[in-house]
Length: 225
Image 1: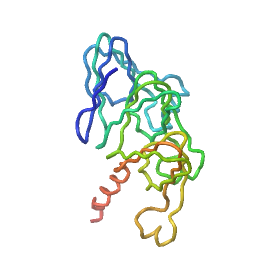
Image 2: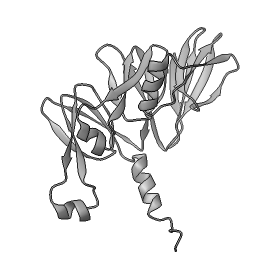
Image 3: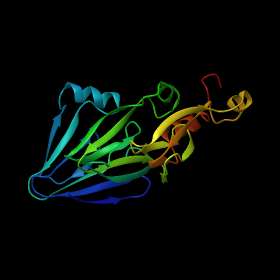
């Protein structure tokens, strides 16, 4: 499989497949394809179906198979970037809900539970995230721009809620309250921050969809206005 990412703030990834190659994707992600691509919808069993549902994805996935050399393109659902990841042994990735866009057939999408309850209740990334494992190339959606850091062992970074796009399994995630009642109530940064501690790679996104929704909502007149 060869691919090219095209477009600006609403990008697409165009994949060129050889005969028999397969791609998996969530429903609604395909934007165009050659006529010789065959689609099959699969749940993969009740366990995998519920796992995908809890991780923020559709219970069913579409599998596209090329009959002869084929082309298929997948589009983003929010302004930002489409980022390729090479998944393999020792190269797994944990992502925010709904980040997965498409992948080669050898990539596995499963649920990842944050071990600390406080992360799930207050962390913005949620108690349930997505884990990509297996073997192959995967494509994920990032809200806004992507900023990547490689944390050393014991090195930490404090991140505003919702800006965590993903991290390697070796990275520890926890939640810390914003100090001071005045800071909590008047600081405009919320009550909690996310603490990521290395070693490992982390991905931060500059424009989480939750922040955009909140900014838009603040300018919508109420029904009493």
